[in-house]
Length: 267
Image (cartoon, rainbow, N blue to C red; front, side, top):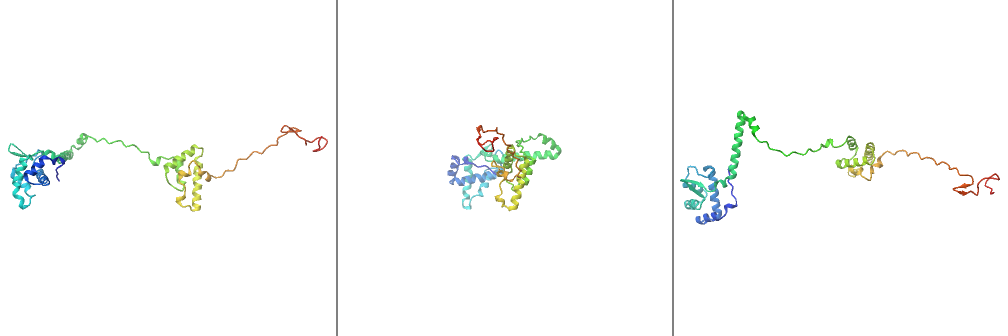
């Protein structure tokens, strides 16, 4: 399918002159020009020269667009196309004025198709490899290599993640996991907390929406600590009796110190 390009430059003094001279509206004038150009796609060369044609052929081309009672005006309108500069004459031949502009996009498409057809013919004839070598390669922008999600997390965190009863915002959970390791908690501690929390949620049949997000479980407030196994408290050393010199306690004389006279008897 072929087409022509029509833009706002068509509407101007030249169009008005053609419309007034032909005693038609500008809309009718545009319609006549478009019909003429569509006909010319198959009857004129790329430079606009009407092949083996004269004004009678042009008249016949636009006549179909008129009502039967208006067809007596077609000859005059056809002559106005010539008089108003829409058709030029050169060496006895008719040439459509500014034809290269009206069919520029179609011409570009034809050239592209011709090049493609020539390339395919050469390829099928056995020169395909040579043609491929000559064909410029399009440079594609380098894509940034995204880190694989599967290799993004450490094995110990994956164990924690597998044990934890709710899966949400894994990346943020991993950041909190790393932060708690820096705080001094071990991988075993965090895994143990996850396992115990999962057991509690299962035993209590906790609704999934009320199970803490892993990033919350590992947050700075350390709620996971409540799910670490309780360790036996370290033994507290017993207090040893302090030997106090006879007669003094904390540097003060003891009025009740014992003596040879009797126990608790003042001197």
